[in-house]
Image 1 (cartoon, one colour):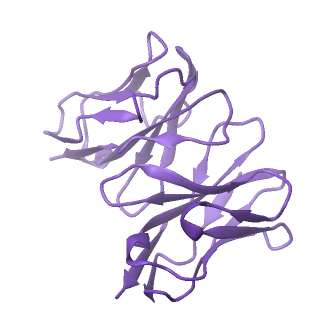
Image 2 (cartoon, one colour; image 1 turned 90 degrees about the vertical axis):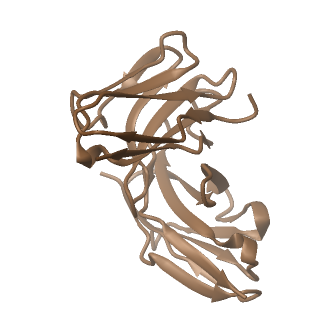
Image 3 (cartoon, one colour; image 1 turned 30 degrees about the vertical axis):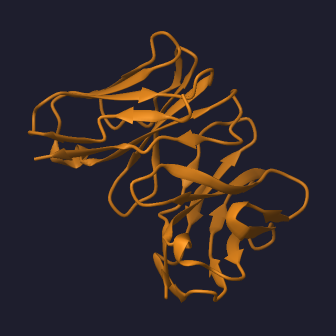
Length: 114
Length: 113
């Protein structure tokens, strides 16, 4: 596709519900990142994939957060038993190689946990 | 650990006036520096980047930034802003050979008519 696509654009969940956020990176991009952006803050690193391999998940806040990229393209970020503090914009980004020289970001999924 | 400080959370400026958005970073090793812009309801878009070489970096939409190693700064400038420059601007740092970006908290630029 022309850019990084994320869905849904908005998600409202009741506390305790599970949610799944989808990211379609630019076709052929090797690297894929998930970031969390709380209100009034900059994006914070969650996890990084190179192809289908999750090389770094050090930023995931708890074991309720899980990310996968089984075929090295589309990625899903899953949050189990959502809590109010999970409310944020979740950004996906991809880059062409393993290089960190330029990231292409999606528009994000705004998650609100009530 | 690396960190990025954007001292100004909001900067109002009149149209056609110059603007400077400040960014300071902390790192003891070679860094890559970036400015990203986020328009309302859109993803972050790369404005410019410093990897090596000339310390004055020119980006899109008439923006430029200067890497100052001694002051550990990477301030963003534009000599004459337009209404369409109204957006949030994020400074970010990473290191050669790594993939993890550290972002600042952002500066909201509001251009007034």
